[in-house]
Length: 129
Image 1 (spheres, rainbow, N blue to C red):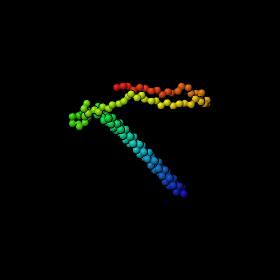
Image 2 (cartoon, rainbow, N blue to C red; image 1 turned 120 degrees about the horizontal axis):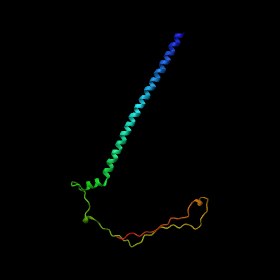
Image 3 (cartoon, rainbow, N blue to C red; image 1 turned 135 degrees about the vertical axis):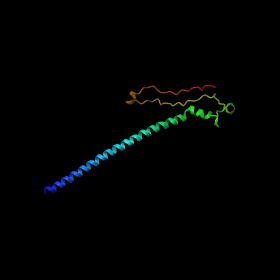
Image 4 (tube, one colour; image 1 turned 120 degrees about the vertical axis):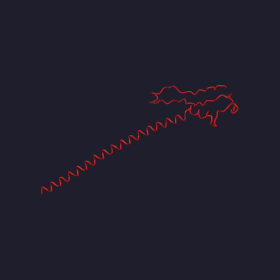
């Protein structure tokens, strides 16, 4: 009877040991997967920065000016013969929209914490050309 119990104990310990080894291997595998994901994330972040730099360079005024003024380009700046002049009438003064606040003021508890200054709309004259 002792031999049967010994075989059961050895079998149980073998199963526990194999389960433990499997879990340790799984932990190491997940650690390597995480390391690969972090490396890929770093690569994508660097690539994003490089692409952002390229886009900002393509949008820069210097690059666009070089493209427009290139000898082989069909684009060019407008000269004096191709400028359209538009006459504008600045004799009319602009009008301001003014809102009228009712004179009756309600006193409330929150009104104690608010200053009494009000914003005003002002009109500005346009510069003459």
